[in-house]
Image (cartoon, rainbow, N blue to C red; front, side, top):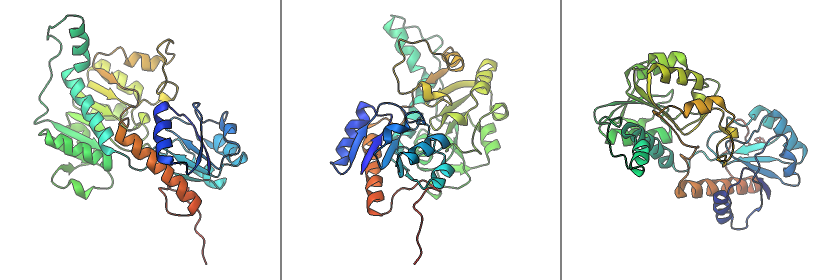
Length: 335
């Protein structure tokens, strides 16, 4: 199968080429996939897209017009794909439902430790010869209550890690994970927000979870709470979070994702003026730590993403089972 792969970076190319073993004819494009760039996929039976590609109705229609029949997402989330449009145009879609849950979970834990003990600030101080400890006071994690919103594979791994620190773990998820029996106590979301010292988001972005953390949710939280988001940027209402930081309701904020990240993350903008004033405001707070959507970025995760993506593409050709995106699976035929 000829596959047009968008938003490609050097590390993606290497992992995909290694997993492919010449099974498919891969064409790599550094540009993002949008309605304006969809024409590059002409002559390809499939496209491979990443999290910040824009697979809206217009883009999907353009892909179908140039002959694309399958969309392979190299991500677990599929909120950037208009599934209704894909189904209408007869396109199927696959995804990578699990790669290395430890990668994202451990990154979330790392953000907690860094914000608490202020490693990022201490690093800069020491390099400047400033060994004073004023302003770097942290707290023991042991004995604190950690709220986990979303207990799928990643949330479950994160819960176990925090339990290992001696934390009390509260969980909120419509579907309880039986594997967390004895590790986490399930409560409703309002109770989790009101009772937690640290809150970490590990749920998908859906219409129901868009701005799950808004001004009302932030108002329920304990003063000085730590909020971590390594899931999807739009789970958090950024303007409301800034207001909570200014008032002191939010004591710490760790973001590996941002709701308007598409024009920022995965690119080197160090020689440019950032035009996003909201993002720039976030960077002014000493108690905010932002990383550029790197939670997934481990060797193990890259290899797993590549292997599953190639496996999905092969399954499309052979008619075997793949990790289909819900609602955009191949149509079942009846005898």
